[in-house]
Image (cartoon, rainbow, N blue to C red; front, side, top):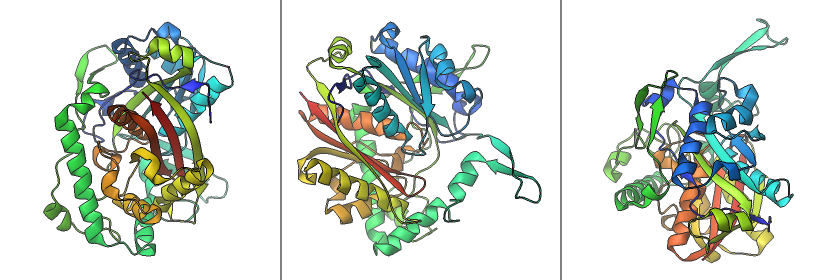
Length: 393
């Protein structure tokens, strides 16, 4: 799709994703934190900031000084480069990578930093002029209200999961078993040390530069057994507190460069990571968890590939229903995906979620000796997005 663009292996990193209101991240400007964290991560990866000539940032929750977007974040990173901010709900983390690849393919940049972040903790409340309202103003609590109400359908996001579960006649027993499997995958990976390659412990500083605490784990994640899941109250069809994700805070970053820059910056220049294709779809109202499967179906038709050709399959799954429906639509065993963990377990800061998913998927593919990597997810508005990468070497 973008034959001249590469993702240099090993020049990436992510913070842990603490659950909202559970860490010092709730107390800081997330744009400033993300910029400083990217500078720290690039230093650890031995990437000179002088190599970067552009920055694409992605976030979905308003933060102070967001008007200045990528320029102020770049200054916090320590490199005054141009750039822009984008958002597409929970597709942001993957779409930012695709936009960076387009920037390189166009010949406009040689090394683009992708930086995605969000802080759902203490999300801002906005007051909007609204002539149609009798009060002449409307007030919105950004995270709470957007998750609780889709203006196009009048329904909450959790209602879309229940609707799709009924549409595809899912069995709650299967959804609970799938969720238990996802928890086993995450904790097995955490104990193996695999995450140490890309998860970076970060210190949070106050405005005065004083240490407020460290972000050293996905705070709020606890091991859940199948028996525990089966005992939870059903909030919607096949949806319990255990079979859906939780809001979180965090950041994730990677680079998209030319082939020459990738070889120069990567600690393993023999590994070539390219982007093969992408697809986006929009499905029927209140069918968001179904959309990722349809996006993957469109992508495979476009590329002529099959699920059997995939070395790694990984997704953004805010509801376990997403994976159960995907398995049914694509005739794919849900046990053979998300091998190193998934957002269902480790949390959902929106902006950086699919960036961390992509990083984990690429690391897994390197362990396997390469191959096709399928990354996909859903976004508000019943949208599905899918991208196909190839890891060679």
